[in-house]
Image (cartoon, rainbow, N blue to C red; front, side, top):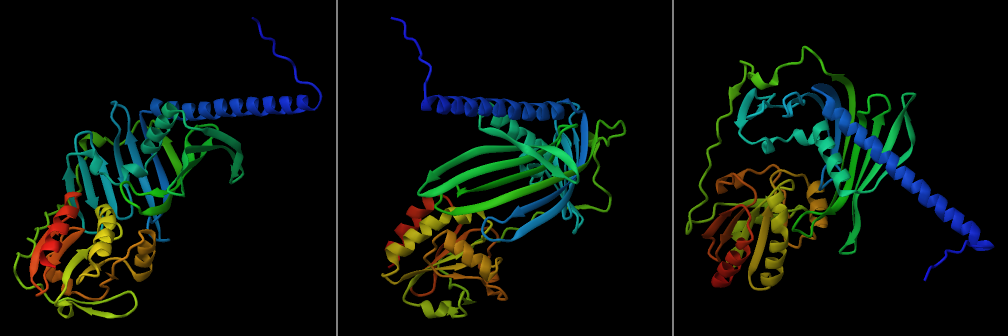
Length: 387
């Protein structure tokens, strides 16, 4: 049996034509925007070398603080490896194809890493953006072209990419990318990534953005610096490894600890006799500290009515940053900023987070460096034993 599609009539005809027009426009938009992105990728891949300057603005995950920097970047793509030199105001990094050299421009020291993943600046570079665009095309994520944007009297392609936009735990999760691309060179002159969501494996909901302005492009220069044979300047010395202090021994008396909480109240560890105390040394910017929040909340809720408490010490972040962090993580236990105090140094804290469990007599039960999932069971067992 053959089915014949009937042409809509009367009032439905206008709706039918409108839907066709919208669908056709969306198809054309998607095709043209994908073509622009493809051309940008092809342009980059065709280069043998590239230099540019970039102004960076980034929002902190746990506060409204904005980080800014100006980076000079040189990239050699001639040998199927993306060798790079990226110079910021505080640090400089060079990848010569076999090792990563990280230089502290203030202390005039350097360190050598065997893995390129140790770089912090490569994630703030054009090759990283191009790599992300390739993944977006492969995954067929929505890419739309908007009306041209005008900057300093010049028109640029305006591209918007929706990498994710969904709902999780009644929260909107998204990552949007906005790009302005030069119509002649097809190189980006502006890039912004705007996102919010949960930190992997945690209930911590955060938002952030990264904004980059590219300018002073130089491409395929014949006198391009040879990055594969880069030599560290003679006024730099190799960074000496920091000597790791051992955690305090089990059974010794916990050192004196005087702190001031978020509301100006004084805390003294000596006044906690008769309680089991878990000390938690932390930092807002430490991902492993973030991972431990859920465990600490559970421990506090489970044992707080049984002569147990958690005392968290943050020696880096100010009151406003800590308050916002606490709100985002729904932190239930006391947090002390330790600004202006120094007696925490007696606890030999070199890594974050660091934990010490202290018994009812003020003696160290055990110390723990870092966070791993097995720590939850270890602490539960020890707390129950000493309550």
